[in-house]
Length: 508
Ligand SMILES: Cc1cc2nc3c(=O)[nH]c(=O)nc-3n(C[C@H](O)[C@H](O)[C@H](O)COP(=O)(O)OP(=O)(O)OC[C@H]3O[C@@H](n4cnc5c(N)ncnc54)[C@H](O)[C@@H]3O)c2cc1C
Image (cartoon, rainbow, N blue to C red; front, side, top):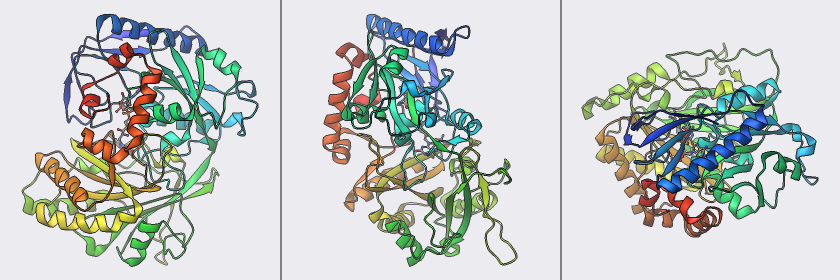
């Protein structure tokens, strides 16, 4: 494995919202002169050696993906950060590599090294006429970083990105690396395990715990992903009144009486964005429908100024700057007006769809400026109550220099996945960077608690987690997650992969 010791002693996240003092940052890479499998196995040895050295020198390690998180989960104070992004090889899977009982088609399996980005995976799959089943609204995260915090889009009948993952190759100690999969859903054969020279563990609890584990279960070296046949998304962004009909859809995800661009058809993706400063003009509603792939469509073009259906608020919110409160509504309206591109309409005033593959619609966001993003998950049953409370909180302690957006995600199987409600509504609060925004967030979390609304925090976005809150949110899942970590990692390795935030959260 190539290891470049950069001697970097501080690190800043992608949004420049914090800087961490570190001992070093290692840029890692596969050996270019080896074939893919030899290079992959050589990197396994490299990780085992690094853990051994870290134990000997009592130096904590932490894997870094694309550095897109707002929380200090990819860093370790005075430790060594491992930049895994360049570890981006991948393997197609043959019949010989799958278990006799595997019910799927091996052609639709991809074994990806941890640093492959969602974009790289999407591009590779497109060439094979395949697609990922879900992504976030942007695709710059690495696959390990994406599952590390449990990222989601709004695929409310499918779930978050980690639901695509059916196997994880984890380096869990100086002498131990394991391939984990669910016992109830076996996928790989002994031949596959022998290729990557790992210990084979089939265990649902261990697998579900490792899925969303924010770098605390050692190094994720590779993941097995189930893909599907390539498809197009027929996408719309329209403005609709935030009325009983829309409220009912948001609260039930029942589309049988919907008046959406494709009538009552159940979309693949459904999201609602509210600008608290011009609610009289309605909500921004994004709907996306899955369609068979063809090559006659015009893919979306990059438009620096316009934000289409697949983009989320971070793409333009950095254009907002802190302002005196009285000007916030004007500023939000101005930035939104210039940035959000509604679907064009035809002569009958019907919205004209934009078509694209998953990677074309949810593409790499252009980040503009320093911004904050927080997200909480709660049951869809609470969504309209939360919206009402958000509007009154904004009137009393705002104005919030940003937007309220709502996406919908099916319950995850990951033990500590934050999309843990049967149908989770994820409310995102994206805003410009300022201390008043942090204060607003604090008041919102308190408001949810005062109103007895159970909720969880996105692990990678701004949050205020502490042990009592985590126990409240996850209950017995915390013990089961910790038990899995203790079972997979020996005590010395646990120390190596413990960082201050994990201690602060009471999960160490
Ligand atoms: C513009 C923008 C848009 C976003 N959109 C969405 C969205 O639509 N939906 C959503 O849910 N989130 C979204 N987020 C949040 C972001 O996707 C998550 O924070 C995600 O986890 C970041 O992935 P990353 O590759 O940057 O990982 P990092 O932030 O670098 O790391 C995340 C975690 O994964 C761990 N990790 C990384 N690699 C490894 C490895 N090889 N082994 C073990 N652990 C590892 C790290 O230690 C860390 O704990 C967005 C963020 C930005 C900046």
